[in-house]
Structure formats: structure tokens, C-alpha cells
Image 1 (cartoon, rainbow, N blue to C red):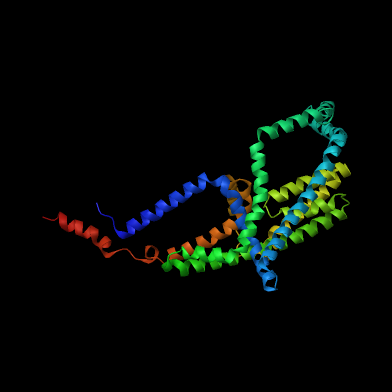
Image 2 (image 1 turned 90 degrees about the vertical axis):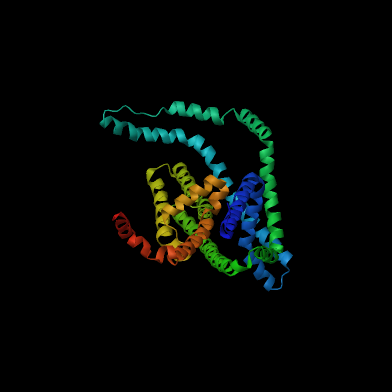
Amino acid sequence: MTFTPNQIRAASWALIAVASWLLLTLLAPVLTPFLLAAVLAYALHPLVERLHARGLPRWLGAGLAIALLMLLLLAILLLIVPVITQQVPLLRDQLPALLDQLNLWLVPLAARFDIQLKIDVALVRQWLGQIFAGRETALLEGLLSSLRIGGSVLAAVFGNLILMPIVAYYLLLDWARLVDLTKLLIPPRWRERVQSFLDETDAVLGQYLRGQLLVMAVLAVFYTVALSLVGLDLALPIGVFTGLAVFVPYLGFGVGLVLALLAALLQFQSLFGVALVAAIYLLAQVVESMYLTPKLLGERIGLHPIAVIFALLAFGHLLGFVGVLIALPASAVLLVAIRRARQGYMASSLYLDQPAPAAQTLPAQLSQNRQP
């Protein structure tokens, strides 16, 4: 049995794809920090080029870009940690009183429908006391035990956090040379089409990053000012965190909403104050979905909401939290590929050709063959 050159070529590419996928699957834990470092290098490369154009050495520009990114991540961490540390003691102290108020409203309402419903506040107070009071030593011992059991995992996490910026720094130093070496691996007959695809993808990703930064800045200012106007004490950390966290679609908004509602419930202890905070977040979500995202990100990378949800679930399933972070940029790249595939299909003979004449005359030939 002989194979045509096209069949041999297709089989070769299929084997290369399968081998690459198996290799990536086996080395996924090792490749994760390098993949994230490549994403960081791609995002910071324009800044390094601008600094280099102003006369700054490339090594210094790369170091400054990495340092600014690390400071931004540290600032986000310092914003969220005080919020959590302030809310936990308040939750322990004020939750029983809030539940008493809820009983005053809930019990008469349930009685109208002949339902006996009441929250056991004493049991909740006892439960909170067991968690927060007198068990600090036990909790600390359990934490230390879990750290000893999962010490290798913890060491791997911190190792990746240290490795990522180092790898990103060296990638930024040699970015142009690495790109040129990668392009040399592309067969010459494909280079023009691949370069066109890369140019379009780069434009889409650049527009996405710039637009996303603008959306984050606008929302951070809006949340901070709006929460301050309603009198929330933690308006600045919660507002800035929510604005920056929208980079992770839905998840960032959800975490910010939960923190804001919890802070409003513990501070105002009234349904009206909680409703005001919820209204702020609802208004911000409507403005972001209907105006900010289409206006600042543009229709060129706009995905249908169903496609966004599917992308988040799919990439999150495949790559975990990292997949959630890169879901939308990766979807933008896939969108470019799908557009090109659709254009190729619409221009192909499979789509344009008419039925062959032989197929049209086949019934007539069969009837002729049946005649004696």
C-alpha cells in the first residue's frame, strides 16, 4: 500500500501534534511558571521598548517593568488583607445581633404562612465561639500540620512565584531574538500567512490589554467614589480591589461584591445600607457590560457572553486558575483563527463548487443500464 505525499505530510503533522500534546501534558507542572512568564513578557514588552527608545538600557528597562508589576501585585495584596482581617472579628462579634434582627423580621413573615421558622442564635453563637475563641492553638497546630504534609506543594508555589519574574526578565532581554528564531522554524512557504496571522493577533491582544487597563482604572475610581458617598469605611480598599479584580471576569466582580456586602452589613446593620451597596455594584456591572467593555475594548475582540462563560469554564478546567486568567486573551487569539478559518472555508471549492455533472446524470445512467 502506497501513500501520497499529501497523506505522508498530514500524518507527519498529526504525529508532531500528538507528541507535542503528550509532552505538554507530562511537563505541565514544570511549564506553568514559564508559560506565565511568557505572558508577562509579552504584556511588558511594549513598555520595555518605549523605555529603550528613550535611551534607557534594555536590562534596566526590563528590571523596572518587572519591579512595577511586582509592586502592583503587592499593593493589591495589601489592599485585600486588611479588609479580611477587619471583617472576621466584626463577623464574630456582630453576627449574633444581626441574626436576632433577622428573626424579628423572619418569624412573623413565616407565621403568616403557618410555618414555624426561627434561627437558633444561641447555637450560632456557640459555633462561632468554638471557631474563634479558645481554639487558636488547635487551629495553628492544624495549619502547621497541613503545611508539613503539603510542604513540597507550598515550596513549589513559592518557587514558581520567584521563578516567574526571573524568567520574564530574561525573556524581555532577548525577546526580539527569540521571536526571530521562532519564525525561522516556520516553513518558508507559510511564513507570509503566519506573519499576517501573528500581526492580526498582536493587534487584537494589544487592543485587549489597553482596553482592559482603562476599564479597570475607570471601575476602580467609580467603586471607590460611590462606596465613599454611601459612607462605607472600607470604600478605598474594596473599591480599588474590585476595579482591579475585574481583570478576572465574573470572579473578580463576585469577590468584590461579597466583600462589599459583608462590610456594609457589619457596618450599617440595616437592609437599606446593604441595598445601596448592592445597587452600586449592579449599576457598575450594567455600565461595564453595556458601555465600557464595548466602547474601550471594541467590537473586534468582543465575544458573546455565552462564549465568555464557556471560555472561562473550559480554560479553568484545563489549566486551573491560570486558565481563568488567560481565558479571554486566548479566546481573542482563537477568535482570529476562527475568522481566518471561516474566510478560507467560504472561499474554498468545498463551499463554492456546484454539484458535479456526473452526479446529476447518475439516475439516467442507471435507468439506461437496466434496459435490455
